[in-house]
Length: 483
Image (cartoon, rainbow, N blue to C red; front, side):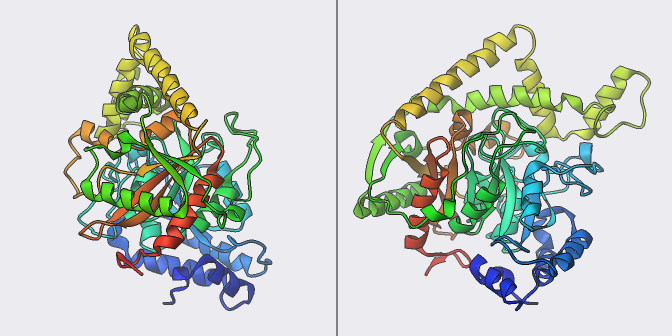
């Protein structure tokens, strides 16, 4: 079997334009790689028959854009017409949607080919890829380690070079954290940059769909393709979508960059801190102005997330009651028993735990004591970020406190799993854009990710810096060594 999907996107595009290969060659190669990497458990549902049919149709269509004919994997909480969308839950095991999410319409308009729906933490609740009803996803760098979550399968599909592109969703770090653990590029766009229509809701004020790719260049291309105003999502922005690619070669010497002390504390693995310091030195030599600063309220990120995200999750998942949506129990004698048994059977332990906490937060006086207070503190955190961006163009730091760790060690510790997202959650709270970029490896050759946070709707500035770092480091992400 050929290795066309290991080529750069420009090389693949050139071969398609010159009729050296066909979209079908790429699709068949992707499914061959899925089969060879079956043990990674990256996919829940394959789209093989429809993908092959679409690839054959494209043979008679002019190649009109760089994404034409390229296979893409889609996280299984993004609605796809006539292709199961399970959210990795028994509750939705047999859900076959009758419409496409807006992002799916957009990638289809670019003639990308969906090869399947990727594994994930159930209802996007988890940060290890271990809460899926369909089993654990494994990290291709080390199959005894977690790949991160909740967008575990999407990260693995790109990292294992099954497909160059994937879509994930990010509520508290669920694109960036697995991207860091698996050595790929993952971006959470500004809240509202990408339509959420057709994304199964976890926490509506935090959720955002984002691109997961091999390179910064490919990430910028996919973001541009899926961005824009959507009349079906009133929270989507009508701001003009830039040509992100045109910013990749820009000079970074004038950039003012902040490094929060919070992101370089003793809670961060020493090897990761040292790697970030190396990048800081590199950028200073290039002429960037870099300061270490304090940002107020960052230390409240975890409790804020636990209150706000879980309260919203409890509300959003109330619809899965055995009547309107999802699994219905086989045996019940009353409406109360129908609700109880359907939800008890349909949801996994982590989801039930979060629903119960969220329901408590919203119950009676608790809504004022916890939820409304959390929203006020969240506003103060937003104001703190806005103040930083009055002076600085970007904020940088590690994506995670450590590298990917062994499977099983956090499954039964709910609090520890939240701390995986210690450095990513503040971005969701503020609605800011942020990208995770591989910048090196630890002594065991596990990837280290760096996070670049930008001002609202300034993804192009993030890409400027990310592109420079990527090209300067020139990492070999196949073997864990530098070229």
